[in-house]
Image (cartoon, rainbow, N blue to C red):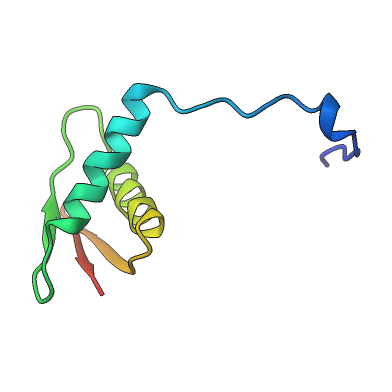
Amino acid sequence: MAEFSVIKDSDAPRPTRQTGRLATRMREYEKYIEGVPAGKVGKLTPSRGETARGVALRISRAGKRTNKTVSTWVVDGVVYFNVI
């Protein structure tokens, strides 16, 4: 079980900022969501070294960041999504 404690705010380390590479990837997935009009479905094929599950997770998180409801599903290793 995890050990819990409470410390002063001034004693806690400050959160680290996102790296440029991570911010770029986040914007990329947000653009994918913006590029899918109503009644259409986006299709993302994972590149080498990526998993369909990872891609689906990134598109879902991008939906949350942009306050959009995104539905994802995976068929034969390809991620499909629509914006509801």
